[in-house]
Image (cartoon, rainbow, N blue to C red; front, side, top):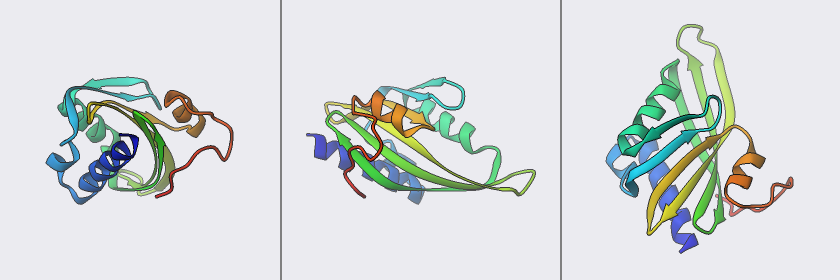
Length: 139
């Protein structure tokens, strides 16, 4: 099942990148919990809550995009490195950074979605060793 979870996470992010919100939320459990661990610990509930979290995340940008370029298989969890780029809405200043997403699956549905700024914390949340150069499933 774990490889299937990696593919579900990949399909969800690819759909979101294309602007296919329904496709991105296809595997979301109705009681999904989304947590933005960084920067503020905000918690959102349900698929609509996840959309609010993303809208809140990008509202300060005039342009925003991402590339998901690493997927780590952790059984019922999948860790994804997401490289984000944006332009500040007011300042026009370019912003670029990596964030780590942790998907938790149950019965083929996303039940928990967490956002981390720190790779090691994301790996620990997924129950994986946090040493540098740790596990990877490639892209």
